[in-house]
Amino acid sequence: MATKKQTYRESINEIEEILASIENDELDVDELADKVKKVTQLLKFCKDKLYKTQEDVEKVLKEMEG
Amino acid sequence: MDGQISLTELNFLIKESLDVSFPEQLWVIAEIGELKVNRAGHCYIELVEKDNNTDKIKARSRATIWTWQFRFIQPYFETTTGQKLQAGLKVLVAVSVEFHEVYGISLNIKDIDPNYTLGDMARKRQEIINSLTEEGVFDMNKEIPLAEIPSRIAIISSPTAAGYEDFMSQLINNTEGYKFYTKLFPASMQGKEASSTIINALDYIYEYEDLFDLVVIIRGGGSQMDLSCFDDYDLALHVTQFPLPVVTGIGHEKDESIVDLVANTKLKTPTAVAEFLISQFNAIAIEIAEIESQFIDEINRSLENEENRIKNVLQVFKPLIKGKLENTDLQLKHLAKTIQPVSNELIERNNYILLKYTDHLEIGLPILLKEKNNELTKLMNQTLHVSTLKTTKEQQLVEEKCHQLIRFTHRKIDTEVNRLGWLEKTNILIDPKNILKRGFSISTRNGKVIKNANELKNNDEIETTFYKGKVNSTVKKH
Image (cartoon, rainbow over all chains, first blue to last red):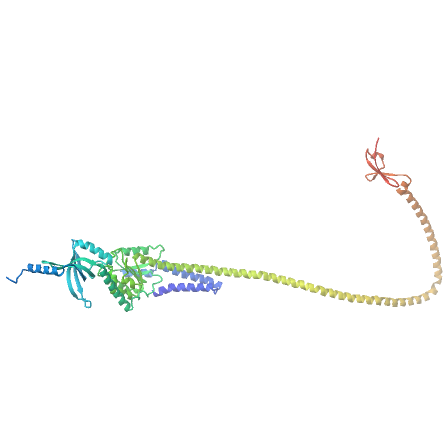
């Protein structure tokens, strides 16, 4: 549970870090493409936490019923 | 037999003396030990008084509320206290002491003062709160941070409760499509066993602590009464000590229960709990959406910046190049300008040098010429002197020839002079002026000399020139 919480927050924090570096013009245009890719992945991860079924959780809860 | 009475007589005596001793009703404080309502609607209660420290029963008495009174007393008590009239409550009752020769002593309850029970409940409640606070556990569950994405939910409820169904349908059918995982841990949500079954459920969840983000305790749809189980000290203590945040939706309309007070988050109804969880997801969804749009904005801004940078470079570059070209042009012009006077000067200097040479030549040449002339004259004189002697004869011949030539020439000239004189005379005769002088005139039409009168028509304008003067005339033909 702890890692799950951290991972969402970590993702958001990482996005914020990247954002800040873009804001402060610390990023090269060359690096920008990589960062866009990275943030897109992070955003997807965060959204999946809200909307996507996590198979492992579902499995464990089902096993409890038995 | 004197001094002997029948039981009936005795009971009548007891009854008589009780009536004398307790002529009016009395307000009595007691605890309800037992309570039963029979089919006729009469309420039979066992009133007790316990020792505060040992909990041992110090006094006991039967009591009755007749149906016609119970019909009013019960609802008034329950609506006022929010409590079901039941065993375990402390009550202040108005009683008359009754004695029946067959059934013995009994208290007839005429009224119950609900305010006393309320006060007593509040006092007990406060005692529990005080002890939880003194033990330093009251806020413990509140201090556990709620998971940012509370998706794995352990539910303590009664599987048949309407509140549980409301909660589930609200949660599963959320319009945003959020994914929740729920697991029900059944418990009795009212009555005496409620507290202990809820504690058992909590203990069970505790074993699977890592699988869940939070525990919700929900109840709803049942009676608003009988919530005293949520004021239970043991249950409240379990909640404060629980390692996962506990969210309650017990469905109180009045005061919050102690379990509500110590829970991480208290909400009024199961539906409200579902809404709360969805709102947590909404908050996260908004956070993600915000950071996403912020990110997109930043990327766009960054790209715009780069674009502007390129534009700026171009803008600076263009005039720079232009300036450079203009500069070079100016330099060239400047060079040209500086070259002109320099070259002029050069030319002038050369001219001057040339002039000087010319002067030199002008002065030098005549001298040179004179010298040469002198030389030549000398040479000529020498030659003449030598040749004079040799040419005397030939000279005489030449002189003769000369005379002859002169004579021929004179003759030729005379002839030509005569010829010229004749030519002159003829010329004078031919000149129209001289002809006009002699009385002739010349007529012209449109500047053309008229040689034939037939050329003229009537009314033609003609000009006639005389030796002196001109006239214009109109032709009249007959």
